[in-house]
Structure formats: C-alpha cells, structure tokens
Length: 88
Image (cartoon, rainbow, N blue to C red):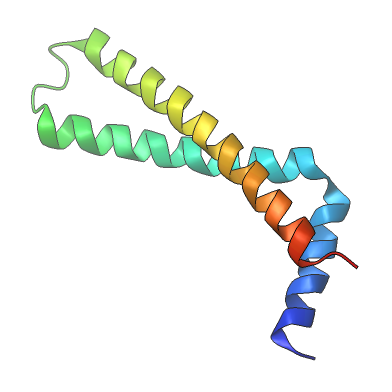
C-alpha cells in the first residue's frame, strides 16, 4: 500500500465524521495555540502581569477571536483541498 493510499483511507475516515467536526478541530487547535501565545506574550513583553488585569483579559479575547476565525478559514481550506486531492 502506498503512502497516498494510506492518506486516502485516513481522509475517508475523517470525511465520514463530517465537515463540521473537521473544521471545529482546527478552531480548537488554533484557540489552544492562541491561549499559549497570549500567555507567552503577556509573560515576556508585559512583566507586570497582575497590575492590569483588563489588558490581560482583552489580550486573551482578541487572540481567541482572531485565531479562532483563522482556524475556521484554515479548516475550510484544508477540507476543500482534501476533497479535491482525494476525490474518487
């Protein structure tokens, strides 16, 4: 079995679960990434963490919204590319 055939079988399993779950997985990954990124940026660039809690909350909300939307876009693009690549 070739690598392409293995990927095609894996894609068929993912496709059977549905587009919504596939895209939400990407959103979840990007939101987790955003929380880690926000935490690191706050700790590195803004050493006074607890002095301005409003700024910290705003930073988290901005990262979650924008990178959540980025996860939706990347998930949809990835879905579309996989449908084209592995169509029967």
